[in-house]
Image 1 (cartoon, helix red, strand yellow):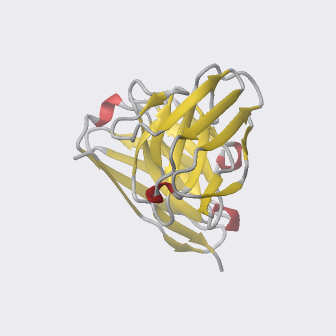
Image 2 (tube, one colour; image 1 turned 45 degrees about the vertical axis):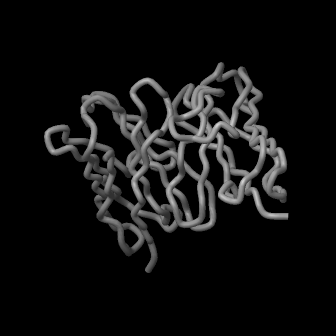
Image 3 (cartoon, chains in turn green, orange; image 1 turned 90 degrees about the vertical axis):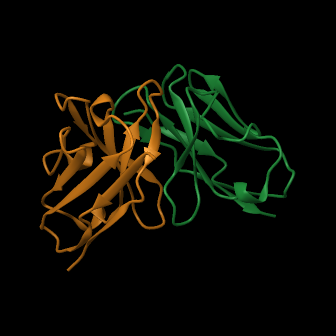
Length: 107
Length: 119
C-alpha cells in the first residue's frame, strides 16, 4: 500500500498569511494526488485534483503543485473560512490512501 | 442538484451486521465509480471500498476484506455497503462518495451516516 505523509500535522496562522502544506508519497504516484478540506461536522470537499487542477468553484487562492512523491498545497492569503483540516489522497492505486491530515488553526 | 444521501447507520453489537444505503440523484449514476470512505471519531479519513460503474470490479481495504461487501443497483440509483462481523474499530462516520468521471478524485460526498459498534 502507498503511504501518504503530511506535514505539519497542525499549524497556527493569521488571516492574510501564506500557508503551505506538504504531502509525501511512499512511492511514485505521478500526479495522482488530490487535496480535500474538511470543516468540523461536515463532509470533506475536493479542492485540487491531479496535483494542480483547481476544482470548480474553489477560490484561486488555493493551488497545488508537485509530481512523483512530493506535493504541496498552498493557500496564498488565508481567509477566515479556510480554518479547517486538509487531507491529501493518492488515486494512483487501490487502496486509495489519505494523509493523516493537517489542521490549520487561528494564531 | 447532485446529492448523495446515506442511511442505515446506528448502534450494533460486536459481531453484528448492518447494511448502509446511499441514494443518488442529480447525475447519471451508472457513469461513475463509487466508494465508501469512513472517519472514526476524532480521526482521519480512511477509504473502505470502491465499485466500478457496472459493478464488475470491487476493491476493499485489507481491514474489511471478507467482512464488508459493496454493491450497487444502477436502476435504483443506489449504492450499498453490507457490513458483517462488525468490530469496535469499525465505529465511524461512513461517507458515500462519487469518483469524478475524469478526475480520479472524490468530487461529491454524502453527509455521512454514523455506525457505532458497542455492547
